[in-house]
Length: 418
Image (cartoon, rainbow, N blue to C red):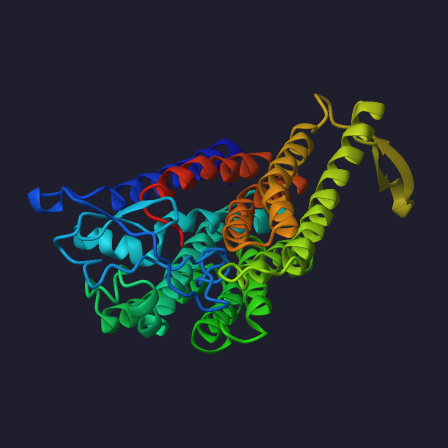
């Protein structure tokens, strides 16, 4: 049995490796003399409702602002950078690696590991081999959904977002579809290494992803499909850590799914605006989720301050077959207040990230403010995952998830998550 310190080191090493690989993948490619001009076009195409990405493995859940129209110049080798309104400046032509990083939206992948870590925390065990296999499976299915999403929307993107890798010709539709299939198979293979229960959940997750991208995206079932995918991803991490932990992970999966549903509902009106109902409902949902996690942490902290330590347990034993209650001395040392303090901190960060944009969009449901509300909802997913992990007593996992936030923001400056 490995020491807890070794497991923590392995978790930190995984996070560091994830950041290093992503930073390498999103390096700004060198520009030649023909790439010194910067194209900036303020026009925005008409975005189709429900085409949201970034919040769940497989693409759905985040804002997808329409890209610029540049009369065929966007995405070609002579263009240097394109500002598409997302806040990130993208080289329109670069290395092959950059093109795939843009297709996969690697800056959004940092919302994925927290699902499995929160699920593992719900089981009461530290992350282990199965947890990291679940993270690898989720990342593969996430990237598969991103590629499949662009493949399914390639005709509409040719009008609305000609700078994207497929309509610009930098990646062929056949290559994107092949990548989606290969990544799905790899994700299922990794889940199979974790056990039969994780494989069953990963198969259901993959089916949800493909159904959303190919069929459900433009229907009323779109938000529910996205919420289901995100909830399944958390349960996948739980069962990979402890096979029979499905019931323990369901409450946290429900909270994460409710958040995803709220963000997705808001995203369906982000280009035309005019509706205060969706951001107001998301505001109420976020407040309720933050209240659940914060109240639980505050109650536990008050109990720890009052008692000074957890209550004593009892053991039953006896000689000659008799049984009698015997008090067991409570554990010595400081009370476990850190995870509960982290829960309160992460819950506050979650509420602070999401509530203000939702309120602005509810008061003035214009397209720009609605798009900001969607972006806030996506960014709030990381502190929510950290709060769920800390709520289960896993302070180390909560810290690891929170550490992904600054890295995600930095990478988003190079490759937009939308």
